[in-house]
Length: 102
Image (cartoon, rainbow, N blue to C red; front, side):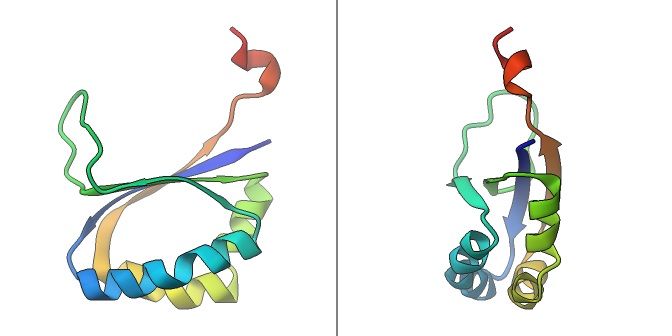
């Protein structure tokens, strides 16, 4: 089942974060992840939102997400993200096709 990783971050070291961004896509695609959205100015429709960027990724399964997130390649580049940002990452199960039609 498809899973979605939703990251919400505040960036406090732009230069280091940009280094992470520059290396991100090759590692994501190597592990069959898909970047669905990355927005530094999302419209907050309801409530308070203390972050400045939202990132949405999709993986074919929880196992594919785990392979990516624990890979040596991602662990190497993620040091820059971890040092440059504060935030939260959620892993969300997709809805099976049979349930998505209402």
